[in-house]
Amino acid sequence: MHADFLRQAVELACDNVANGGGPFGALVVKDQCVTASSGNRVTPNLDPTAHAEVMAIRLACQRLGDFQLTDCTLYTSCEPCPMCLGAIYWARLQSVYFACNRFDAAAAGFDDSFIYDEIPKLPAERSITMHYIDLAAAVSPFQAWSRLESKIRY
Image (cartoon, rainbow, N blue to C red; front, side, top):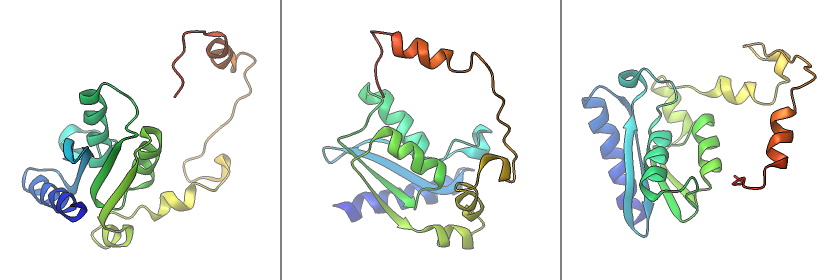
């Protein structure tokens, strides 16, 4: 069963290449049914966040009417990149199955190793310098959130 869904993700990735997208495909499955699927749409959508996993997660959340996918499994043609990994954790997916790994992706020209290397660095030491500015009112949005009784925690 897992291999069948994973094969669908790989087929979707191949179809996506033929339709102008990147070589990645992902499915979100709930109760043995595909809830959402997508290929990588970065270049057609002009959106660097339009990775297959992120797109499938967005569609699944919309279709299920929830921002959490705790009862869902993600099947993806390749090991998720750091951005997609973050989305997977935020969506609280139950599990992930993938076909290729990050080294296969790197060999095809999709090398995310520089991002993995950047994550543990202090912000000022990253290749895209990040600047902290101490603003007096910077925490006011968090204070407003803390006071909000009707908030939905995520």
